[in-house]
Length: 399
Image 1 (cartoon, one colour):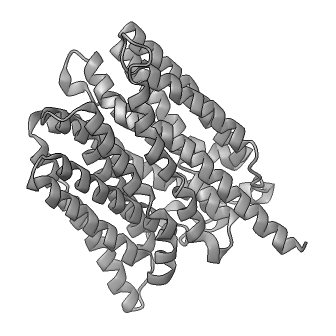
Image 2: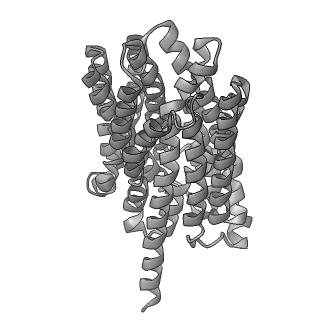
Image 3: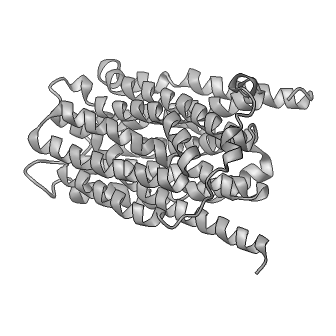
């Protein structure tokens, strides 16, 4: 076997293990998405605070992106990924205990801790890109993200099955299950082999962040991922609350979230191929149009099919904008610059996500479902305008 073949085999093995790891991580996260706002509503004395736990989760995700990236640059991807899963298991167990004793502040704190776990597994996509050849990079990112399909099929079902598993206190069984999944994920991730950055690579700083951030492609990449993830979070977090307000059941909400997560990750089987064939900017544009389609369907009514179809489109829009933005971003930096650029990108993305999740419950309770959806139109328009700007610059040879 040649050295090149060995490298290719290692790359594919890493992509497979990272996809399995993401599938398991997203299964737990999907269960949190399905249950967190409703568990918050169960515990909170003020219903406007029902989405505070998931909001604090995203705040800690944002805050943790930078230290997580530099920790892995120093100690390696595998160490960081395993540590992240351990934190996720502890968070889930503390959440279960908070529900058992009826403590909303402790539930908020444990949900915030889960944000550190989320910050770490978000780097699976970058690890896949680093393991792959340039020609395989976009597809490697896409294939790792396809692991979320398993989460879509299993996560909401597990949430439904375990929601009353430790009655009379609802939701406790969900969080015990999440902790178990995180511990099993550690076993999977122990088998990945991604070389630690060399001492020379760690010593080099590369170009200043300001120089890299002025690249038009960098601006559009970050903007695309920010808007795609932020919009998705805003609508997704408000959806279970809106559905219950419209007399739909918890089972209906879990069904819609399940299809939403399928919409998020099923396209990943071919998103990389679309990027390779049509370019990241075309895929990002298609994602923005899917988000606008979500708004139209949500504004058309509040029947189960409205929530179902709209959330599928929301997931597809997120997939195209997030993976397209990630692929575009990886072309803007050198290997020695990856820690600061990846962390800056995810800090900005999850800053937007934190704002979206913090405002979601308040907006849903105060101004209503239609206003939540109408409010995302300017954000989608901004992302589409940025993409068009970069297309025009490239046609003129300016980028």
